[in-house]
Image 1 (tube, one colour):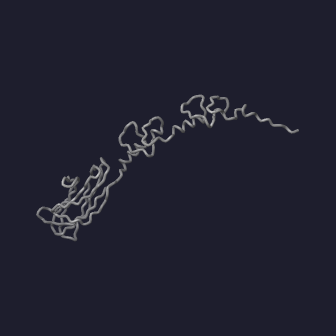
Image 2 (cartoon, helix red, strand yellow):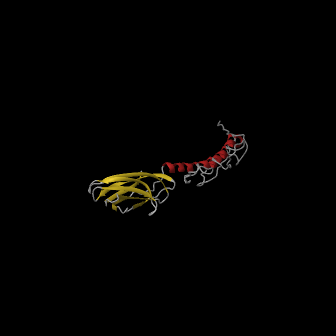
Image 3 (cartoon, one colour):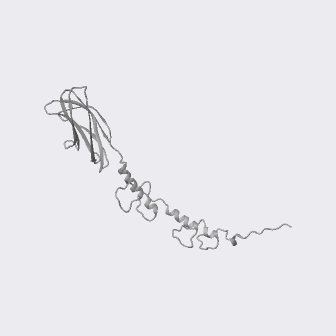
Length: 226
C-alpha cells in the first residue's frame, strides 16, 4: 500500500517570511526578517538581521564633498573630492588632511625652466628676467646656472640674482668670476638660493663687469627648481 508523506505546514514551523518589521521572536525566519524591513541603527531586542544590515549600509553612505557633518565614521573619512586642508580644525575630513600633508611633502611645481640663449650683457647692467609661478607661502629652492663668455680679456664679472619688479629689485645672492682671456674661453657658474615666493614672483639676473674694465661678455643662463 502506497504511503502518504505528510510535510509540516510552513506556517506552523515558522518557515514562512514574517511580515515587515515584525517584532515576534519565535522562529529563525523572524530573526532573519523581511526584505522590506526598515533600517535600524540602534541595537535592541526586536529588530531583524535585515533591519540591522540596512542600518549599517546607511552608515557607510558617501558624504558630500567637503561635508562638515560629524555623525558617522564616513563623515570622518570624507570624500575623494574633498579639498586639501593644511589648517587643523574640527570640521574637515581625514581625506582633506591627507591631501594637505601631500601639498607640503610633494608641492605642485609650477616653475618654468627656460634657457636664455647667449644674451649679451655689459657693464650697463642689462637684466634678463624670468617669471616664475609658485604656491604662496612655500619655501622653494632654485638655481641659476650657465656660462659667461667674455669678448675681451682680463675682465672681472659679478653675476647677481634679484627678486622683485623692475626698478625695485632686491639682490638675493651673487658670485664673482674672472675672465682671463677672450672667447671662446668660457666660465661656468652656479648660484642657488631658497625663497618663499608669492604667485608670480619675478626673478632676474645680470652680469656686470668690474668698474673701469669696459668688459663685455655673453651670458647663457637657465633657471630651475632644485
